[in-house]
Length: 338
Image 1 (cartoon, rainbow, N blue to C red):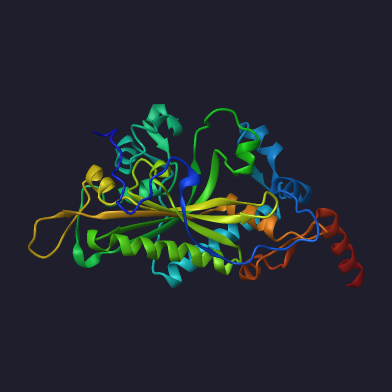
Image 2 (cartoon, rainbow, N blue to C red):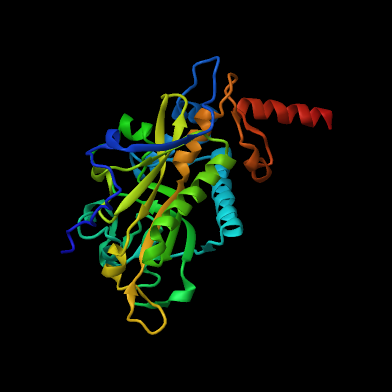
């Protein structure tokens, strides 16, 4: 029974792959360029903010090292989204463990079917988390919640770990797929009758972050063949990538209904009625490397700079990311001026 997936919601369209997903809406204007925009990895390496060779040297192919302004951009993106979700939408921020036991991964539906995709610490019988969804969902495992406390909304930004599937090549680079990355995760525990409406609200919360970053995107409803093992319904939020002329998924917003709650025995009690299983929702809000790649491609200039979105400039204390040579020249000019 643990290998039987969740049952798709009747509103989910039929289909096998991403071509069968249903586009719901688009937002924003795709940036016009009077030059050929560079893919994120070429521009990032040229600016010295993504170090692919450094990541390979330390841990092998599929790992990346952010450097200087790249490392700072990753950090401020996390700060921006955590500030947005906690101050504007009442999510409670948590800092969970990065390791979880087998029972926790079984609760969220990662085990037993996806066990080969998780890094294992065999001596301790613990696993590196594939996302913060695992510890946040298991926070209320084997509990009966008060109905008055629902919905419970949590947010966390953690490192995520995914074991390699096959060789790491050009396709993984285009999809910004790494074995270790940071991601903001949104998790909600809701009453069954409100889970559908709450899923729409979670999608809107994620959309707001992209709108503030002024990144054009679209929202799609995933078809049956694209649903994850535990999902009953899912929306994908995909950002426009200027160099490839295509969309890149940066977030999936999923309604797990009572699938995870049954596996983890997470229930709620409404007055004197018997306990019922809650519904759980999850969303990546969004994955930081993919968001960084979208900013690099969509906000590049003909001179090879990256214009920082206005909402982030107060975090970065700068309006653009320039080449190391340009930064050095600016520092020399300022020094002479002073």
